[in-house]
Image (cartoon, rainbow, N blue to C red; front, side):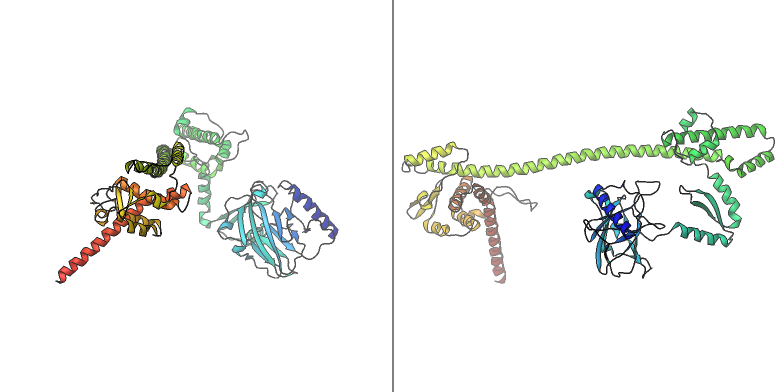
Length: 556
């Protein structure tokens, strides 16, 4: 037997290379899985799988590593695409042996394993079913196995002599069900009735169970016969157009939703079945009116018809009421579907507009940022040239080489003023420093400003030197009223040429530290922000001073 098991193990190794569900023929039977390249007798720890028992299901086992196995379950008998149930045993284990079982060909998209459910396990020494801890169970879709759903769970064997059994959930076998029904039948209970409905594909018994009180058995049979005819979904117009009469027994099969052999759709069979019911009703009503001579005879015929299952029909009045109500609901459903379609189109159009609007908004923001940067760069490029023309054009004459350099740079598209030493660029006269455009500052304060650390502090101190605190507190950078206050009044803006002087001075300072044009443009774009912060600080200090003065006046 050991040799046979080894041969089957080697066959499984060959089959695992092929892959696929089509090679699964039956359940594994005392099947030993050996590592790749191993030859010899199976040792302790070479797992033996078995599923040849009632409710067992395991078609193939592939050895991946020493600790991991791929399991392939067999599909249902009459539904080859449905693969969910598994039930198998494992033996020949080692103590403290840890393994991972991957059930690799699940067919369900959604499973309770995602919500905390776990497989069942028991052993010979512990025959009570228990669940594996949910933290050791994973359910996912694996691209390595034809994108099938895989359920992986980790387990540690703790006793060598035990045989472990794993199952999808609590197994309930067909034999156990038959024993239970036999016990109920032997009790001869009045409210329980067991009948043979038919046989399955595998020639197993299919039972029909009836549970009711003995007095209600006759009423139950009559109600079952009346409910035999199911009213399908059909409009009355189609019934009036076609009036052919067919055999009722054949149409009864159609009403039970049996499949048509000619391959037509289910709706065609449903339409013809309701036509046959209507024709049958009209035929029976005509025959009853012509042949019955008294109400008693009509009642007797109706009673005999109720006793016969094949002649049981729905009353015409009830059928017409149901048909009318169905037509009304169908009309309402049509209106609702039209409204839903109209609403869906509107939502799609609105979504498109919102998407276009969002793209336009982002484009506008990018264009605004680009415009600001271009303005800063243009001011920096044009500012020195304009100032050199305004301030003493007779005395300031650049050397021929320098003038040639400036003319060459002006013809290029990426021109920035060449960094010039600060003391050589600005004019000193009578203790004053000329910054350009007729703006003079104190020489001592200018030297103190050059040693100031940080762009923010440098810009704020330079703004105070140019405008003064009295001017800054009554001005704004852009001249636009703030949006934070509803009744805010716009203040006069600062002079553009003085703002350009501030930017130029800051540019000369930054150019001494770096030559990266991107960094220079980024640091220059914060000039307005620094000046705005300085104006807010001045206004805040003025308000605090006014509060102190008013407090002193009140005390006096």
